[in-house]
Length: 265
Image (tube, rainbow, N blue to C red):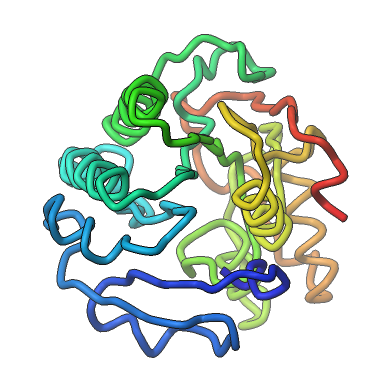
């Protein structure tokens, strides 16, 4: 959302009730709509609130660390997202940008392009993949442009403290050990601020289809951890090998960017 501050657009936000105070101050936020459960709202509710809107960026989903991959709430997010899309189309929205995940792909392939086969192995990834497949077909029939942004491994501002980077930073600042696996896993990491800029530019472009939101640069977990530790000044507190390896965790995940790099300017 911060990335949209630089765009010449009016922003209408839809948030979960109780989250209004977390909205940053931006002059181009013209309205804030809240609901107890975004995924429980029906077509008519969305149609009403989408009137006069040209582009939707759908970034909502259940994503609690440690729980979201296997949660049954993914089914609610899927059905609720379809209600949103139907309401948006009824209101005359011209463009829809959805947020997907690299987990939709066959992760055993290692190097993931938009041509890599889809093979989700969790309810989260399956629900995301199902939504993208459905919308890719259905939105064409109602004359709505569609773009699906598959996120890879993001880190940065606003992360849940249970995620890797904030966990490491928090432990080291406290002067405590950060217990990690070997750190040999290779990942495609991207700062969330860069991802936000890309999505904002894509939303206001004419790009359609699937887009990998990734860096295209392989980085080991160890390298990322050491970078954070050096910033804090406590690399001595990293404990690689203190945790067992996750046997279902893919050893190598690298995205192939398919967006014009001018979008980063």
